[in-house]
Length: 84
Image (tube, rainbow, N blue to C red):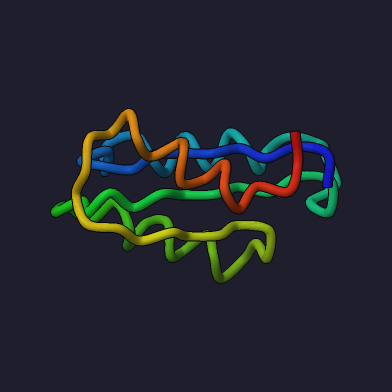
């Protein structure tokens, strides 16, 4: 694993699909990177959209947590990240 991409999610339904599509549109082998989505207790449909991508991409991981400050989310992702 060379790269870990950490995405905090809270009320980003409007943007999350484009974000994930942009990542997976790249010409990189999915074995070389991972995507870690931190669900910060989002009340919208953001995680439904993320779930669509988990069915297609084995390198996408989800961490669910109760709503905290959004700036704390990356710290949760770093704990499980395998890339740099």
